[in-house]
Image (cartoon, rainbow, N blue to C red):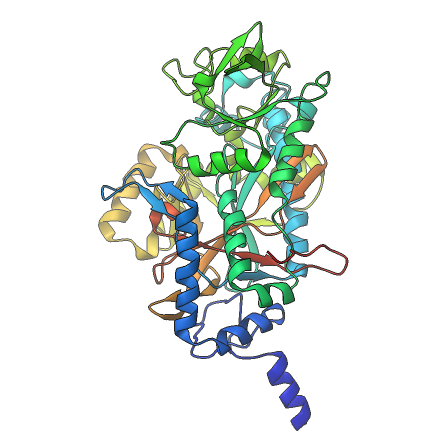
Length: 500
């Protein structure tokens, strides 16, 4: 028995001086004993003196600063350019859990593509009463200009970032879908780069799946979208410019793929083909990975005051002479009200039960839901349907009476714009704070590439966002959140990330 006890203590070390405080922790259990895939990491943390963790944290932050990994906070009067905060303790995802997540995301993307194709054509899901017509027609992201579009291979959402959380039981929920211009993947790649250099031994021993092939997979998917007669397509990344919050990512991905980074003023449409201005004259562009919002893409069709898009781009797109990723119009599928119907989409289009659950959602447009929400604002999280980045949210249990009253009035004035959800006790991961390890709440944004209706690839990992303020549930970088590296453990036969 003594030998067995010693073996257990070696296999499952405790994380010293750490408290889970009753929350579900992804690195250790309620007794702070390392979970099965985290033993080596916990052993390393226990061996390292606190000042060494702080030193490595500082070294990583300096590396990220030198690489210029920034984002913009437009509402911050103290200065808009920020370095993405990074935490040195990674999040570890078991192979079995990842298998479940991956299957659920593939299913979800298949259904969302079917929905987008349907809602811009026959609208069978509306005619059959699965989604109320008024919710579609009142959605600001539903673009009548996109009715009748036929994207290559019938794929609308080529690149998706799906936000996910775990609750106090460890169950996984989809929090929202991001199908327009999802950002953050550059942080995933750079976080991994610096972590491998600063924790090489434990990283190698933990059998972590690679993420470094994302740019090549992205490039291959974009090339596959080109018009069929084009043998060697020219791909470009379309950015709004240097003042965009995600400009670093636009330039990084263009550089990693070896393609041109262009702004709208660099492109011109002639005879329904798109050309790029170069020092050698005009060069045809066949595929555009656009990081410009839908309504700014083409002043001929959408906003006439847009200086970010390309006049005539939609004509070239409808003619089949250029491919766009993602297709215009995808925003309706990440509207927070339409999100509530994704499980119904999966059943309707695929005749399958959802693998991943939504967070239970009250749609304030429904009178019964609205009455419940108004009566329970102190218990719920309320979200504005058209907002992102952590804005337009009321966290009822943490809000004042005046804030709840203000949101109640907003809901009454415009019920279509609000949904509400129960306040989940989000999972936590140990995080370096106040010179010690403390639990902080996290979410996860995996990135999914779709090349065909049933050709869906999920990056093994994603952006773990962490709420750096103690007790906060808001993980967005614009609201003071940071990020962690995400280690998905490889199964037998799967490739693992190599040493730097």
